[in-house]
Structure formats: C-alpha cells, structure tokens
Length: 81
Ligand code: SF4
Image 1 (tube, rainbow, N blue to C red):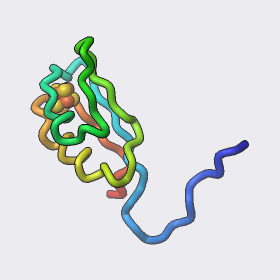
Image 2 (image 1 turned 90 degrees about the horizontal axis):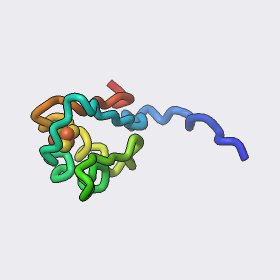
Image 3 (image 1 turned 180 degrees about the horizontal axis):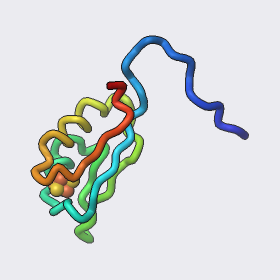
C-alpha cells in the first residue's frame, strides 16, 4: 500500500496544516488546549500532547491556539500563505 502523494489542486487555501511545539518555550499554560481541545491535550503527567497534522476542520482553532499561546511556542506551517 502506497500513499498517493498530494491531491491535485483545487485552488483552495486548505493546505495541510503542520503543527510543532517548542518544548523549551512551552510553559504548559494550556491555552492551546482550551482553544483547540481536539488538537492539544495536557496530560495528567504534565506533558503536552498534540496532533502534528490536525483535521482541516480544526485548522481555525489551531491557528487561534497558536496566536494566543503566551510563549509563541506553537509553529504552524503549510497554511497556504
Ligand atoms: S498555550 Fe503555548 S505555552 Fe501553553 S501549553 Fe500550549 S503551547 Fe505550551
């Protein structure tokens, strides 16, 4: 089974969003989890878990989480900018 690359362009700005969090900056405030609970999750062990490739339906919430992160620890790429 091969993954078949990227879909042909439709002219939309829905490029897949890639998420990364700089653990050195992240102070576990949890604001990202409040904004995008389907993408970010603070575990009971005090570690932040997150989806590196959130569903497109969570893109807006993910971008909002990145904007509101007080440490600017969240980096998004592939926003179709
Ligand atoms: S909002 Fe920023 S600092 Fe807070 S847990 Fe999320 S990534 Fe870490």
